[in-house]
Image 1 (cartoon, one colour):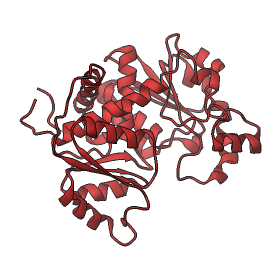
Image 2: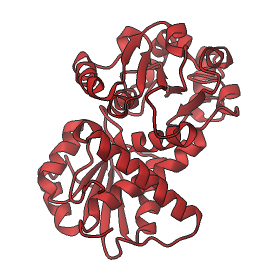
Image 3: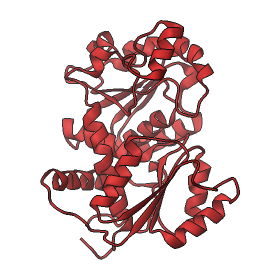
Image 4: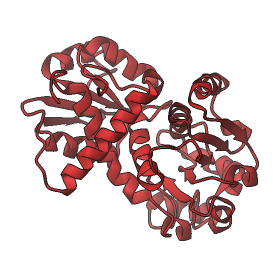
Length: 336
């Protein structure tokens, strides 16, 4: 029998069992097949959700909106200028108001404590679209992408995150790998590693799943035998642009390039949660080039555009996986 997640919040993957996470991945695959086969799946007709965005996003917003509409739901989008949350109205009061009007609430923004407070007060499912600490919806998409490539059994596989391994994506990858029994390696400078507390939690989880958790500053060790090489931008949204000089100094040796990919497993794939500074075709990319002379940052254009890259499969899978999270938490528990 499939796990029952009806009425649950989706705040961080530490809250879920490995079986529940795999269920969401499998449900994502099923909904993806329905989408590709043009099979209607308006299972949540008549429900409404609201998206609270304190940080903008292309993939997260579009995934929630298209996913909700595919499921038959109405959607309200509130950008940072459209809500009084935290300014004229407390987070607690905002949650109680929106929980009376909507069937589900998504939050994308800053501290994990904000989405936790929303969940404590809303009375309806709350979904974490990204916080400073965690990015759980990205993980369901990422593991769907990995399993599409390598199959469901990941126990013989290794995923290595290169660079700023202590950011929300690095943290969340460590959690999901520990849950699913996939070896995880954080490869970067010691200043940019996950917290000792989170590493300890994940190592306890890994004892049950058979996964290993490795932290290293050595690129050769990190890349060796990896089935997945994953990276993210070096300065995250909400961080000061003044950090570029320091991050470039710290992280340049962890750039994912052809030489690094050659050190990974023969069947290794490249993944990135996007956006990416793999060329100069963005205002930030060009600005960094003018200041520091680097035309490519966390990944080279050669790798990003290569046959080993799965970044756009991964981006598409955001929509299917977010749809799965919404359906699983909002559906009637008696329904199929």
